[in-house]
Image (cartoon, rainbow, N blue to C red; front, side):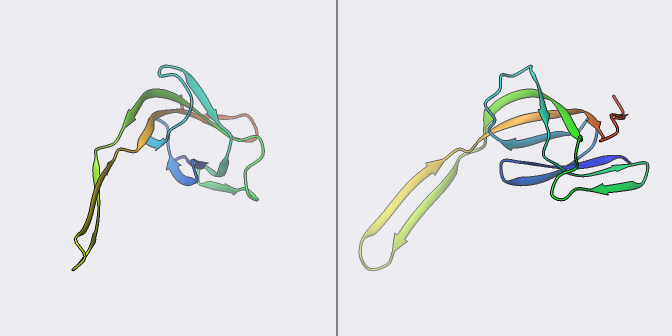
Length: 112
């Protein structure tokens, strides 16, 4: 199985063709394509190519499906015996991407 390890939003993701991932919010419009060029490693036909720190010429093309926000989490602060209580909610913004293709350094496309 061919895959790539990409870095975006301070996190690393292992992606293959057709995968749908949620990443930290990117400033792009839904329906557009984006190229992720921070590719840490590429595995094609069992041959693993690891970059130092990135693989030169490799990129991952993804389709932006949606800009959305995650479910609300509650942040509750409490100190006993002092009547101190604070409740706050948070919804993290994210971008949903569908991986279209992985392009290796030789320009060979992996899948479609």
